[in-house]
Image 1: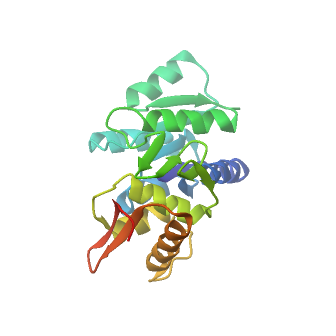
Image 2: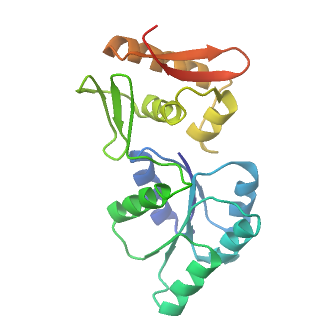
Image 3: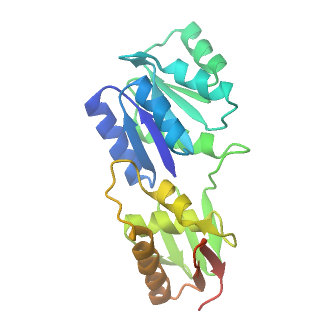
Length: 225
């Protein structure tokens, strides 16, 4: 899942970005309000994590702008402002959660998953299809109960397709969900990744098929090829 992270402290942004990647998310990192607003116009995000004290304004302005457009993206605020009035202002502006600095990275990830599990959001803890199960919290894939080793990118692709199992997922949707602005993406990156995932599923005995619909996209379905 693609996450927008807005944090002007470079070191903290790097730590959070690394934790998000390890947890299976794809973060786009920006350090100011203007770039964050532009990013919302250019990509679709499943959630946003926002600092409030930005060099060109208040992070709450980003939330207000998105809520004014009725954007459903869940938003978590990170801030050192610990007053009750500050928390109330953040929540009234449209924030879904409020985490005070300093914080434990494990708590940030847990809170992010929690707001993504709310009604209308996108995250389920465990995904399953046929003889394959995917623990999205522990980042563990099992086939017939046996733990399968899988590189991060393949795991992200599998999760993306599992969440839309039986439905066609466009190449563009996969590119937007799997790669951030800073990732080196070639025209055939998705095709190569699908090929690797398809081979991995076959080798591990997963009774799943990744169908290619030429010019349309891909669909994960129950049943071995």
